[in-house]
Image 1 (cartoon, helix red, strand yellow):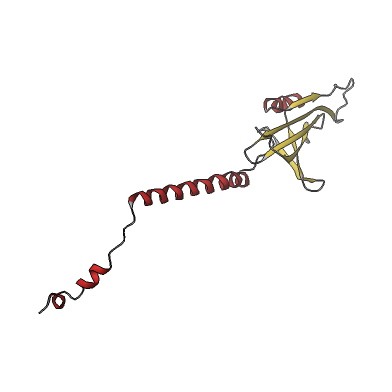
Image 2 (tube, helix red, strand yellow):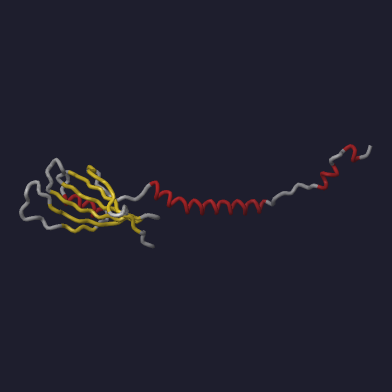
Length: 163
């Protein structure tokens, strides 16, 4: 019996060699895949973070929200809060958050239940993709059951400053 008869697949085995990919080619392909994956993550992570955790205007912790809504064409949101703090301490909170505040002159005669302006504050916070700017109008002199301090926060998106 011939050798081919004993090993029928030997002729085909020698004609079809298994092709192997060199190790360096695998390493290059892996490096390209990792670089592409990192690029996708970097491009998607920041906008996704902005959607999941949007920037908001700062608000003191000891306040009660009275109302919220949108103003104008929906590009500006507003919130109205009441607090037992005095108006100056609310303005100081916003100054600590990086706002600039302009204080109003205190009225000569303060009548009970007749509100008056205390301060106007404005500021902004830049994020990676999204930034927010705010304006705060602070008034006090409201009756105890209403305030006595009520402030309105307007917040709107702004383009981050390029660095």
